[in-house]
Length: 613
Image 1: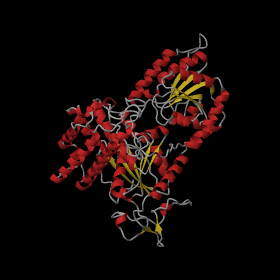
Image 2: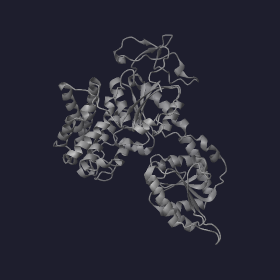
Image 3: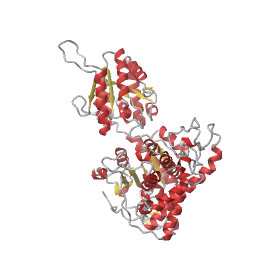
Image 4: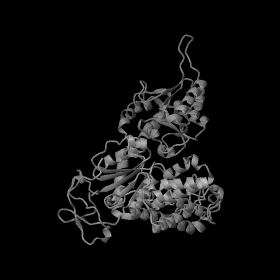
């Protein structure tokens, strides 16, 4: 099977997000071929280079999201008219105030109780962009959903039709970078904002707001101008796998539109939610927030509608997708795969840690809320005077370094150095360490150093550090954020975030009960080995690839050497050992859509793909 792997700011770049997960997936599915299409986020990321790629990666193509030179395309009168029409439809669907929902967390609508999301189980409802202050959307009791379903569906259709119309125009004209930056785009956006049925906040948009929104839409729509969708590129893939929402998934949408390639979308962190949490300074105005939220909400809804299967990494992401209109019958939760082997020695060896030591491991940044942990440890010391806290981790950027300095100062204030006698050197019960230091030379030994591992975050997606502690067989105390409860599953203690007293009580309970710590640690390790290994992740995606391709229409007929038809170039359903990509059977590039051909093609010997690493 030939997979078009779509990434944004990730694999195969050395500094890419989720690069390790993608690398393990590609290496684990060695019987398939992979063409990687990577969108970079910065010049620095591109300069950092790529990770070593396995032989099954046949081609790598890259494009920057952080910059786009003017394509130099001069549009004629007809093209300009078509652009104004399609772009007008797109921004009109974005600005329309009939769709209900909020530009915030699911269930945060001002109507209360989360009922501001129409058609929760429907396949095409969306409208996340309406700001809570508008009052647009159903009543707080949820009875308004049926009345807005048709309107919301019409707007979704308008948005999708306009998006694909712009894509077709970009393909015909050679790009739309200049058009999206033009005065025409800004004036068209302004007309949509001033329309009678537009969002109230959109109608109040000023010129700086319009310019900010138009610039953001130009960046978000840059994938429309890429030359990745021909039959010698993504059009030749049997399946497109987008490893994130947003621009990466947009590329998959266009490959599906132009060539009928089925789309799989994996979201370990929901891109739409991340957008709401990370709006920059230029999005401070209510109109900008509302319009950008509406655009990303409608794009996410279109992605969820078009994808054959969605694979969220946890139940939290799954709930976001369902609230955005994804059909739950097409959702498969696939947990991230992590390497368990490096933690085997610690997990299977007897616990030799100091029974009074708590350990925190991770990146030092404000979201980890080490301040609450330090205050909680002050309460622990009142109950267990011999307890110690080891904080193991490096700061994340300049903000993390400043936060680490603040935490060190707080620890010195809360816990003055203690000495056993008048002539002994004082010692602080809180230590700040980094992996690689003599005390903690490796990550597994960091977890092994404590009787209890603590997670104190106020924001967390999928808690990787928590899974690592589970692999090590450690009892854990965690705050109830992100996917923590789903990961723990009853094998650890969970407390509310920003609650030092509750955190301290849970830590004391485990420090005083070694038998309970042992039981919880063993159960945690068993759960982690069952659910969160690389092997289960690869097996899950292998089955999903087969499911998608087996249900997708055959777009071309390929014959092997004996004249027998093959369902696709490398028979992915085969389970026998050996590299199927070394076979002589290979599908020819499709010159025209498969449904327009009347005669089958014969497979040719495997050729080296162009554009290799």
